[in-house]
Image (tube, rainbow, N blue to C red; front, side):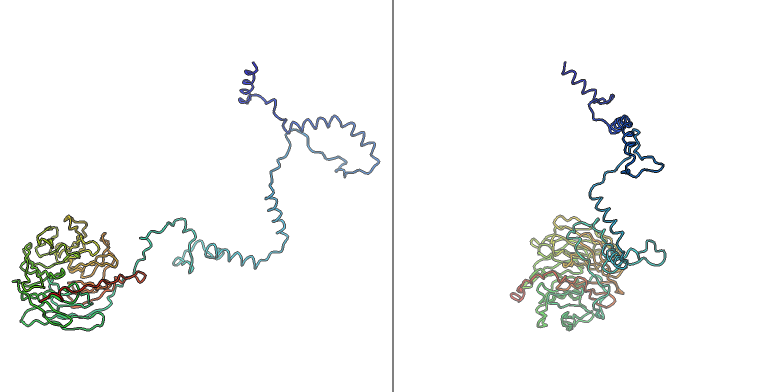
Length: 489
């Protein structure tokens, strides 16, 4: 039974529908009981007061002779807030500061210094609204402290600083009597820092380091002209294609012609080297392979174009040869088997501009003529087009800039300019304008910092737009012996 009684008491307490009998007495109840007991003792107090009336009162009586007393009605007590020790210390400090003399000059100077340190400017002088003129510039050296709210850990890509590219050429050279022919390749920059330029029937060498100009060759036949020039890999020998169907090989150091190779029946408008093998493309659409080390130089003929071959380029690893023609086709040839790998017909114009990616040997860039105007990137392993971009202008030349991994294009009608593109997104970086005629050829300096553009306006312009970052260490140049020098006959 006691157990059931205990459970009933618990339920009754939890319900709270009746007063708690064992709870302590409330304060107002204690006050009421105290006042009742004081009322019961009031006659004796009055008697004692009358007996001691002759004595000096110990307390000052209130007005009208009535003693002041605390109201004793229940529930009339006032609320006293809780004060901790810290609040009392702050209050006493503030009260003590009120009695001290104010130092206006010192406090004003301190406030101004604090404001400038924390906010970057004096709040007293700042304007919330400024209706006239341009917006106020932040003081020099000002940094927004709130910027940390939106900052994040910088990635290597975001740490790269955008470089300055001058819109004006570093140097302009005259190119009088330059032949304005889209299908010819009249300029090449060799590894020895010599720039070869074909002007009508003459070939000139310009030393980029010293500024000297040398006449290397002049055609003897009447109405003949130079169609193409190309440096060997070591920069010691120059191959020259002529309108008389010949390919000549020159030793630049001694300014001497080493040999003249006859095999074509039409003009030779394109040349490309692969170690000791020289490839030449002619107007007939044929590509001849020459081994310059042996007397019987003509080793192979590649047939894949029906019109003039205007673009030739060997891949950096020597595995593939790319050829472009006026028949709007581009062929990829195997260097080992001397056979065709891919025949690409996506271009709708002549394919003269060809460039291999130096850091990705299987990537090839090609550009189409006036009817096409597209730059296309190809994976030669699969023959698929990676990306394409309409440049709205004839593409006459292409080259890759290794220093910043970008693509440079030369354009004819209608823009007549040099453009720089990001690789592989083909997002435009900038346009280099100034030529008054179409750009025929582009060449890159050996250090990769300067682009030379040859135009139909008979000028050659040098654009220093890929200068290396001085903080980066330059890779040591690998020494290479000349195979041609050892085995040429």
